[in-house]
Amino acid sequence: MKTSFRLENAITKLYTAFHNGDLHPECCKSCAVGNILDNTDSWKHLSDTHGSVNLNYVGKVNEAFGRRMNGYTPSELLRIEATFLQGCGYVLPLGRKSKRPKDPTSKDILFNGLCAVISFLCALDGIDNVMDYSRLFEFENDAPIYALAEMKS
Image (tube, rainbow, N blue to C red; front, side):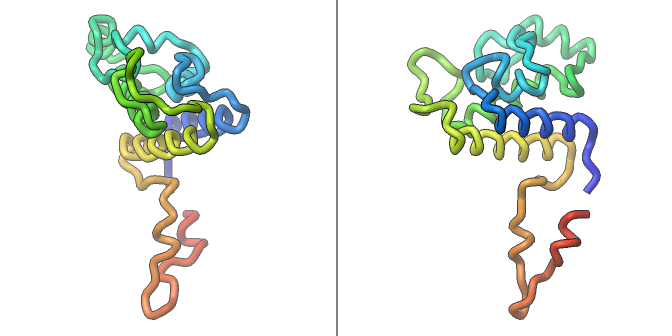
């Protein structure tokens, strides 16, 4: 399966952050988008509220000028972050009284968030979800429909 440079780059950064313990949903530099953008927090100025998908004035101007950050538009970045937070169990937009997980850095919670993000990133690029292995278990007449080698290409 052919993937775009931006998708490959994003997945690599998220994978590295997950395994190095550098992923935290409530930190602008260590969240999904923060990691995709090389641990910077410049993206937080695109919206007024963490977890919102609504661009503020700065976000709208950047979007109108066609600005891309590591391949993603401002509105795509906000949707990526919202997807990550929701996948981790947050109720959006984030506020002091918003529902949130008890342990936001739990590997299980972060994994759920990453699965949601990777699915969303694949949808943005118009490709099948790279984490969907359900086809491996499809069968007909007690035999697999797809060989493992077919799944890798």
